[in-house]
Image (cartoon, rainbow, N blue to C red; front, side, top):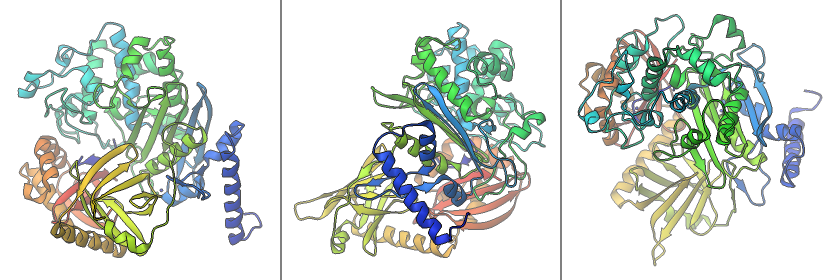
Length: 615
């Protein structure tokens, strides 16, 4: 992963106006043709996918489709590559945009970093050894590790770590993700990464939760498994992956080589930050190959997905049908042995996203032979990936990911006031509803507010994101609680008392004004300095954090201290902007590295979130 959280740490002769009218008419007719039935040819579908559908459709309203090129320009994403799986084959693959500013166009053969999609592909190599009888998913990993051992503690004595757990992020291991290394810096070996010793730039990978008890995303667990596989087979990972997974699946352009050989750099989409600027050091290098090191294309990742489907049918030389079914069976939550799982019993899918420095990507594949892969060369590419997956789902009529259709109801503006308030949701977050003019605006505190439109006398929906909000009323017509649904995530909340409501609403209004004025929150720069100083010394002031951040910091202190201390002295701190969510973004220069830091303060001025992004 490309970020280190210290929280759970976007010609011709026609005149401009005529062009807009022409485009609007064209897209409306385009959608009308699509609504009449599935597009008849592959080229029809490719054209439709380039007209991005909104997150929510409204009955009786023509959808406001956005051209893919316009969305890329809006988000400053230079390049995008897409592959679509239909009826059990790669139906089409195409590149859009450029590999870099002024550079060649992206094609279906352009290489991108797969980031965390490296994990489910790597998992096939582990499962291949399971089928060969060389590994047992439920045996103590220390029984296999030879060149290094996972240090034992009271937690591992209760329950040893197993491969089933490292592959499903349930081993209780630390280190969420990895920032990578500039190509001209000294690289750590795997054991240095595991111990968090220089030149590693992340903390030691250790057990901090009883293994098997909860899901906690850990790239660190995959690094441990990377070493284990090398110890057991005696084969370098790049060769092992090529021979046992990539070549058998036909992933001929893919490699886990880190760094990528110089001779292949002309095949690469170069990485860019969220402002469209090329990363000055180029692609980061990831010696953490298993969790983050795959170079590939959407077509090759589509071949991985089809290879998994073939394995389910018993037609693979990589893994058996029995092992493939085990891989796609939830172990904890919706986590399989590598991929994340979803869908209905009738139509199951597996998926994974990825985020390395300057790259964002997404893979979704149904077991019945439908799916898509989107890869981008931008830190803002996750929005494009979501837009494209949603549009592909709509065009190909998938049962998941497509935009829902809502019905708009009429409500007098005066009737809106009773819904305004603060609601404490059952998982600990806060949902805030405010009135702006003739409509309501809702947001989970710390997230971007979205306008709400009525669909009944007590139900509202958002057009910008797939949010549905139901309010409960008592016999007197007063609002008492809320049911909040975001995609497939549902939660309930009770209305807060008058005093808390006044305080939170005042804070939200102040945040909205800061976003408008682009002024940082008072004390956010000082908070960054205090957090950095405390973590580097290993003695953070926990009063700086809110309750959840304080708990997270206590649990992860060893790794956080190692990471922050390894960056050297903090030199400069420069405010950049207030994000749409109301967090403050800074450029932070350390003695040994440069980061973009995003910090969010709550209504009491405590740190509610803090993320480091390499730049």
